[in-house]
Image (tube, rainbow, N blue to C red; front, side, top):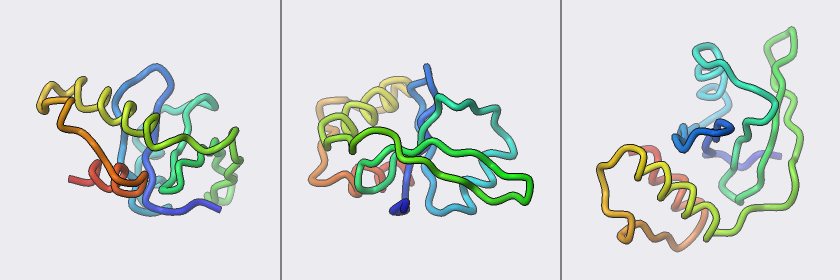
Length: 105
């Protein structure tokens, strides 16, 4: 099961979207065009693909093993680099949930 908060990673895009809850995901899905290649990364580093059913509930599918803190940090560094607002060398985290929480600001 998904451990919230999470971030939404669109295939081919460095921007990450913070998701505090499943309702945040529902809100984002209404305004985004997303594909099967997009993933959600939860606070444990686990990746999930998902589909929206006709009754507006999500079906999540685990994808591969969990990402390491180093990989999550690299994704967040790429995200921040795309915004050109922060020195990348200052981006360090103690845990994956700390890394994801940094996207909420």
